[in-house]
Image 1 (spheres, helix red, strand yellow):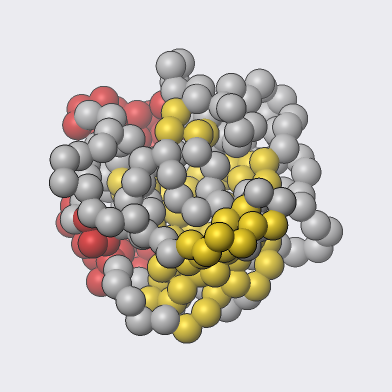
Image 2 (image 1 turned 45 degrees about the vertical axis):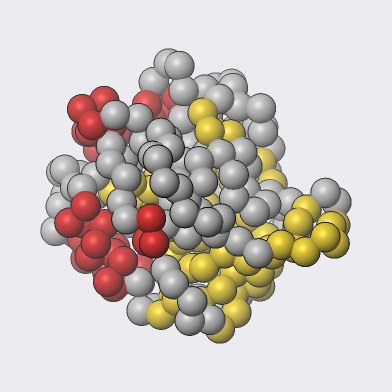
Length: 226
């Protein structure tokens, strides 16, 4: 759960996102020639969770996220509507249950809508699979009926602080390659905020869309791409 913050997605922004998706094809569609997986994993497990890594972006640099606990999604969610995914995870409403008390930092999930960016710029490139992420998510609050149990879209990650614990997810939809490329070059929340401020109608980038999803990882130094 979180207070209202900058860039909450308006109805107009959500409608634009849906239109962008329908105009250019499903954002969760796998393209041929998928590159190698975005994570390394060990055989050790805790509560069914893998141990392993993805890349992430922090204040202009590439860092490593080390995962070692399962994701957390609980219902009911704030809007009171049902959640249709097999994982109980959804996009479009804040949750009502946190995995721990106190302030929880935000992981911003950069998600291409209606196009597939360069493979090397996706930190979780495999649709429906990324280490200790939910495999499915209810997208129907944003994309409408028929997306209640969608595979998790390919995406990349931005954080604005180096922490090690639970992270609450906000999704930012990116609607064209030029905007995506600016985010990849900037590798920072400041870049995202500047792009959002320059595009108040949400034609190229959405505001922050809440979820009921939490991931557990540590931010570690790293320089691997993307």
